Length: 316
Image 1: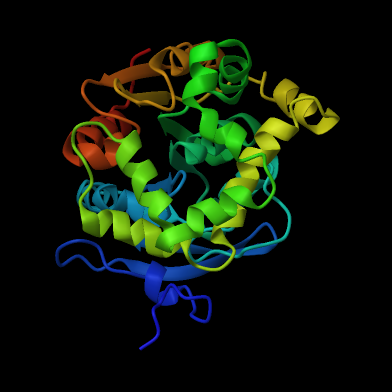
Image 2: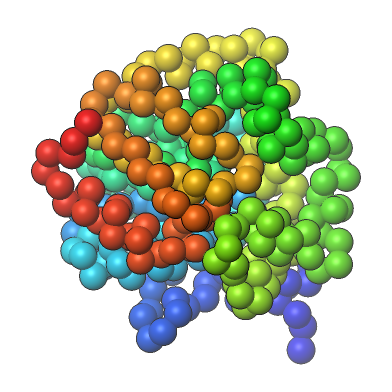
């Protein structure tokens, strides 16, 4: 039998997997912004669109899909461009275009708007979508990622953040990072998820799931490309223009979540992002959690998120 993660195999068997327990998620593809995106969907009600980070795919939100559906929401987790079951295009990995992917998926789902929930890179893109397409974003929740302008400032001026985010600088080399990610059956992916987590470590099944997804052909390259743009564009006209565009304030209620032990995105870097929000803004720090609070303590994370989504007047 062929290993589903070998280059000759299709990503379907790796990506279109069931949720833990007996809950059946609906897998399908939707067209948006000139590409095809895989989504996993559960529940009915107001749309909540979940955006994963690196080095993960939709499955990172397996716990929140169930919790949100049980709470009366239409929970949809999408694979970002180049990852999981979505198209791997040769171009289009700048944040403005990736944000158009997200808002395009909202429209393709037949919804007028969505609450965006993003982690890590997904959080960076959620910030971007809320600033650039505010009519399509009902609410914004971001985990483990500061506002893009805050991220840029911290990476350039805070030595501790520059050191903590050294993997981003390492991604700027051609081809070597891809080879490192895929070596020994993507062992580095498992080490990164473990190293970036707090004391509540992921089990081997979780790590193997992410390793298999990274071994789908072209995924390693496509998952690194957004970070290459984020650094290489800093002094280019397109990057400068994007940074200026992100001065536009976010005008939807925003929930900002962060793990106190996050080793790659310092609390100090994330805190202060509220200066770019002209709407109710709530900061929530999870003590004892690392870079993946939605997986390290899914009950606490989901409870905080759902209570905020249901609050008709979220506090500032």
